[in-house]
Length: 262
Ligand SMILES: [Zn+2]
Image 1: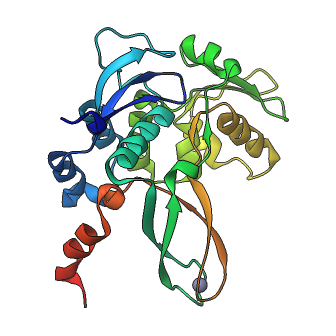
Image 2: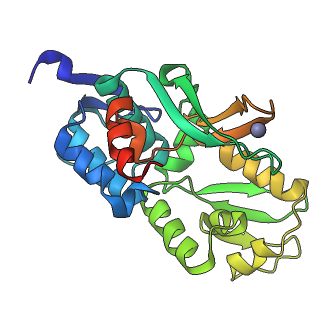
Image 3: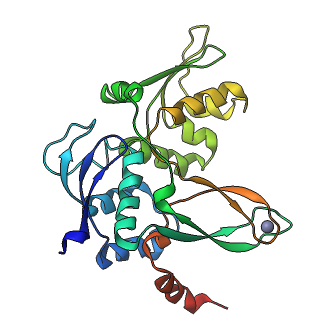
């Protein structure tokens, strides 16, 4: 292994360590047809375990040995950051991906490129670090007086979100309800079924306030970007996800696509 095959990184939470380049054997895992479309958290846990070689600073996590607890305690923000850093170490900073125009009159499919190193990254703030280290318990009082207890998305929380998404579908209300662990109305009554509660919530500033707090206190790479359709000029927000093509070069991607090309 040459020295440039590894890099020391500092994750958004402060977790620091050495990662290596992505190997061909890792790509087999990532391009497996059954998981490449929409990689779930379990494949991200596995890829982080492979990429992370040693720990120099535990950040906010408590663990023994060289390996951070990716599948349980490590924040999603650190996980994506680690995968993205390994991608940049392996293939450089330029990344291109397919976007389909969301205008129903257009539907043009186009390529969009960006420099991954330019995506802003938010560190875990001191305000968030204390409740995170104290059991990952955050408290927000919504404008209507409802008190909500919730968690930042760790590996464990992510696994719970996935379980409920499979059960109830990928609705916004499901994704937020899966992160909530306490709900008390202003009259003192407690909510037991978070999924029914959130499904019935108005999409008003009461909900926006909670989402804003959950976003403000989270850490990680800002993956939401704005792209512009070259055909109709419509601007649209997309998420730079971590798909099967994330680690592939343009040439590899084209070869893989050829058998199904028209
Ligand atoms: Zn368009």
